[in-house]
Length: 302
Length: 289
Image (cartoon, rainbow over the protein chains, first blue to last red):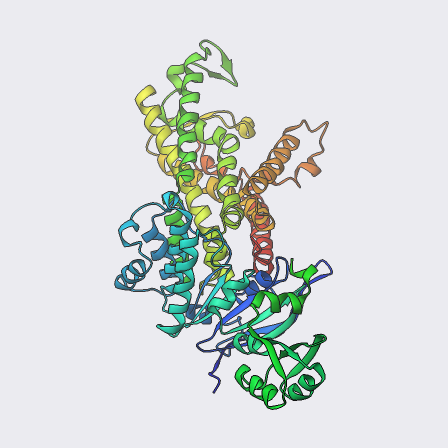
């Protein structure tokens, strides 16, 4: 059963000097979702996220956070966000950055500030000026700042950009933990398909500002799952496979069954029962990357 | 309103903690020392201007030195510092990305803009106060105390006069507050330009360019530049704070109230236009940095 909608856009548009960069994007993010905006560079992901947060004014459509428009700025107290690179005052200490952002958000007790610093592993370095932090530490401090107000929704723009492999792994684990352990709804943008596949349950695929696909990531991959079968005689095999899904004979005796309605073992049973000899059967799970390319087109995807 | 004070407090805290904020104080010290050295090399003994014998023992003391520093500094370094400070407020934070961090919190853009404007004006006033106090300290140590000689060029028809030592401190306070209010126009222009760009240097250079252009045109002889045109130049009206010195005169107050309020209205009106235009731009602007 779907949860309440935390974030919704309705035909969101943005035009810059006559050029449409976001074109009628409508989404609904439900409580508990880890929702991905996926698309190549220039697809309109960052602009969309900025519109969700009120940094960029839509030229059409509207945004609703927790059922309210952005004119009510109080809704932002329930949102944590990191847009592009971590935005921190480098001449202030990590603790001062947190104190300021906490205070601007309506205040957070000192104990909460210590708690989030501990969670991101920066408690011992909180008194150091941010200018001496590494990129990964800055990213972690930005996450601490985003977590500070105990947000119900976190919006992350390309959260693993610039991180080393260990940092990427930690970030993905953190995103999953925010959703699974803290019940926080997460919206993130990424041009990394593996990232969206690894952490998101729902996603929108954007290309040239338009939604190419929106929905459940697992369902999308299941729909595109393919079973490759080599069997003979081909005519009898084709008859046996009829109705098992979308069947395409790519060469005589070689069939691709996509959106299979039955399990591979059952396909084998059907073929054997029809007196067909099965030479090969392989269940192929496509990666999101393959699905993405098929939806967006190789040229745009690159 | 509570949100405004909260943001203002943090804006002042950021200025207090940012090393670049102290450049103005260092420049103020350098300027005071440069004037001190210049005075040391001057040789006016025996010369006479407008009936006043320019004997150093008559005029050169702490109050004169402080007043001189304020008057010359008002055109030499204070606009530069005010423009640098205001120019960095929005453009600098937009360039660094920290502006969007602020805008992701509940305070509105109006609140943030007003708090930044107020912090700029307060810090500018702090700089002026520092400059005067430093000049008074240096001047008293170097030349001693006494009455303050008023020599302002635009009052040349009134000649020179000396404000007694029990009178000039209050007048210097009013003059410094007036100078701060006058520099609000420079800050307003810089803040407006700061909303239009993500490059603080562009806002800074644009403001100073406009200021110095207006100053140069205003100072050209009337034969070259008509008085009617000069009246339209902002810098023609920014010296209203000089009237503070005319509250005391040996023959009684000579304050030109008509001129004072005309200039206050011009400077205040232009500053208000700049601040308001900046606010409108900022509220409507897309933050893409």
